[in-house]
Length: 277
Image (cartoon, rainbow, N blue to C red):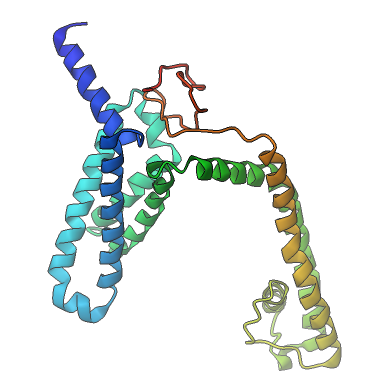
């Protein structure tokens, strides 16, 4: 390796450790400062929505938003440059969130008010688990993700069954109550049924007949049972995932950007590259 290539490699490696790693002092400080800027940018958007504050400080708030957007854009580019397989980062969860957090201000040139979507930057706060080295929470998050993934078929079938039940009950309520009681159409009646099943109860529509009130009572009772079913399904899968818990660390592979490596791992489980241990 030539001296120039060696310098470039060392430069990229050091920058990678700062940007991606939360275990080093420099990396932790970088992420803490990044989180502070994310919080500030969200606060600026909130303040801008207050008309009195925006009328008086609009230019300052706008300038601050642009400063943060430029900083985030620079950070996004550096994340792409310092990793060996940039598309792995670009299309990863955090990569997409980082991209979305930089777009609103640029989109404001074409769509008025789109800069308010900066609030999506709040998703970047998920990195707090890595920054604070709360590895146990990372493991819990992975368990929840696995439990939801394992439950998706059962929950999908259950939701489909609930939708069919809502259509049947909504149609029945439309036939019983009719236009004169606010059930003006089958879709409106289905809307009322779903609102009642989920125990929301807006109160904009209410049954007036005795038979309709009896059916409404049954729907309300069913609602409590329906809410409990998905929770139970996910809980069972979560308990199963807990039995296979593996301790993970905050190491991110410099080659493919894969994380969630086991403690004391020296190589990436995905591509086999050496980790920055």
